[in-house]
Image (tube, rainbow, N blue to C red):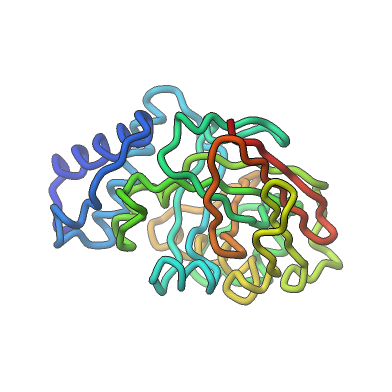
Length: 262
């Protein structure tokens, strides 16, 4: 680590306050160019600790920047990982207050729910599928706290991977007999298709993102517990939304979910 604990705590306070107050900031590596990966995840961990101290509950995990389209859009080469708290969850068909967000975007995802713990190193797609209880369609709403959505990957990690809201719906579907790679995905905004893709856009197989997360956590002596909801990463590019927009997602064999922005 290149940053001391005081600096990490200050950065966590700065980024979380931006989230809670819906205001932007310059990316943290502008001020701390020597930040390394351990520092970045330490800032994210400090944000999580702040939320837990106020009574929040961790309800899931997320992989970010896992589709080739998303990597190209954000000019990055590696996926990143973050956490989800209960206040991020939105009911299927529910409303999201855009005044509480900065510059929201939506992306379609396949969400996994585990029935057994996953731990690296050595976790692979087969282990993920064996440990999966079911999958459902999910819309993740991302909202980077960085001005004009300009950031680098370490700044993204520190900012909890732009996490802000998510919605799940459809049918809880076991993975047996499903080829998650070929499931068709259609994201609509105001009744018009705005993004189309398939599960293979996420690292060739969406379960690959879950395996990578388990392996990363394993290096830290942690695991993905049974019963964890995991957003496996955006299948298409992220789509900007504003007040008045309605967004729906349909995934072949899994059903649909939707959300409104007010």
